[in-house]
Image (cartoon, rainbow, N blue to C red):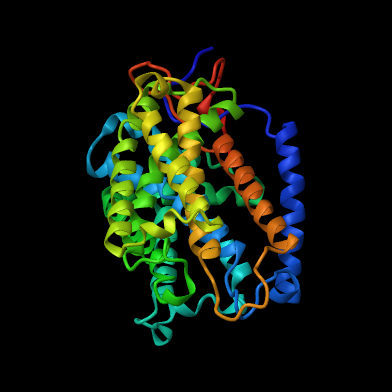
Length: 420
């Protein structure tokens, strides 16, 4: 028995102790989510006219979209810039992006007062070209579709040659196999178009998320309010793409008891300080041009939060990843990647919540306990679905030259015996 040098489903036990805990959290979150849909947004949140956006926008949507950036950054690196040695990372990154955007949409439904009208942007008669939120919505819709199309070859690979419908449905087997073969051949010829579209669409809506608060100059703290927010949001999304891939890969390796692909991750980490440096330079230039440095040194609560965001989320991991020993250490890589991920999440929370100061607020906003439960439930459900797909579809792989990547010891797979 040996590891097979192909993308393969991970073998193991699905329901571990951690999975059972996540299942319980997801179950409670789903129950509260249904409660919100039935009884309205006011019954499950602390949102009001002064604070129309809260935890769900800052974390579930804005942070979720940013952390799903590993999909388009990895696709660009491998498919556009032809860095083929990172090819083994594309499928896990694609899956993370696909699930990330799926759960972003689910989270957004909870935040929309009239969630049942979410389909309106699909009708040209209801388009509003002057709305930034429309651009975000339509791009996310299209990009989510693109992500599922990009994932389709993995599904074809899983089911092709294994269709074995039972009983009276058996007459459909040949037709199903023909459909899978035809779809696979067609998609192989056109997949590059969807990859390019995915990169373009991601750049569009990642930047547009930063435009949402540009219309509120009098309601935001000067440290975070800037007319170049679209550029900063795009740069931070690109900046967190590779750290999120590393973060996901190392956690998946630990969860599935696989050997981490340290060599390829260490090589990928070399790019991260470049993007961190570009983002840091853009922030410094922005603060200087707007002449808001005095706000940084007033050491108020907001200025301290801003300093922590930049120091721990950008400067510290950039210095860490410039060190060869840290880049070649699993714990070092995981720590640095985690700091970048948390730094981007902190930035989104700060922009949409901490920096926001409505003019006539009666009291500050703090998330309702039900808002927190829904967020934790969605995150838990995402992890559970990711685990299920990785264990049933060929997502993780072993490099064809024999070096270990996502290698699971003692796997014995008879691919011809798998039937659906």
